[in-house]
Amino acid sequence: MLNPLSKLVAPWYPTSALGLESGLASLVQVERGRGNVCRLRRAASVTLDKSLIRPGFDEPNLPNPAEFASVLNDLAASAGMLKQKRWSIALPEASVRTAILTLETTPGSAAESEEILTWKLERTFGVPLGELTISKEHLRPDAQRRERYLVIAARTAVLQDYEAVFSSLGWRAGLLLPRHIGESQWLTGNGSQGDALLLSGSQDGFTAVVFRDKQPLIFRSVSCERDERVDELYRLILFYRDRRSGTGAETLSRMLVLGADFPKNRVADIANETLGTDIRPLEAHDLGLELPSRDIPFDSIAAPAGLATLSWQ
View 1 (spheres, rainbow, N blue to C red):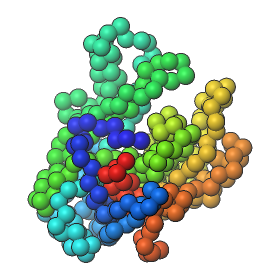
View 2: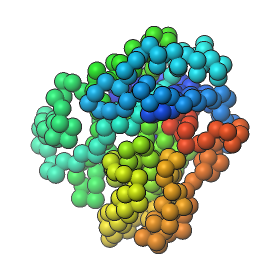
View 3: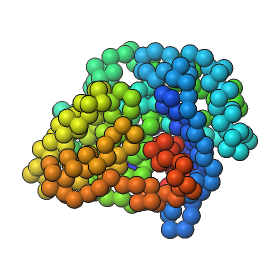
């Protein structure tokens, strides 16, 4: 899936990217090999004190920007990337909100369409639009021919705090995106077709996206306890099965499960039992990514490495 953002996105795509979440920062630099294989040229991760990043949509995320900047500088030094200035950034999932908005009626004009979208945005995010940085992508109509939009929003003040840290390091952050956008590149790149499921676990729950022919069909951000994840996942799979029923569309053919707290085999069992499929969670080598060693978990670098692959897509 090409990047849907506008204001959050500059028109160049660097080969270096940083991934952030509570308790972890990872950076990568990728290079393209033969046959669309992706290789990590450089990579490094560091465990963060959870006081350094407090992901959230409504509150400041960086209590101590100077200390956070120092940690990032040390991380870049450990990877031999101090001279790198152009970066893509995968922000913590909780810091950004994503929604698929559907227009129930056909607008009579572009002005009416914008008016309806503005109303829906205010209802969806519950924040004055003047406080948000918002980008949207026009998706293909749904089965009822209703217009759909993928919308991503972040509080401008939160983005500015991150950008100030990157600027203090001399970094030019051309892409600032939620983690699932970077992770989704592994399912939507390289001419991928059909239905695919991304499940990305976090400390507070998980993000689930079903893609159909590279475009998001279903998006869910679920906040739940760890022991509730299996039940929530089952509800999601049932919703997908019911929505697919009678459409003639092919069923789920690929699945990417990320996050150490997600039981990958159990996820596959639920999907296969519910949908009558026989799929397994994809690993890095299935997706064309060569990892130099087992010391670099794919889960920790999937988001930044996915963003870095945009440099040649």
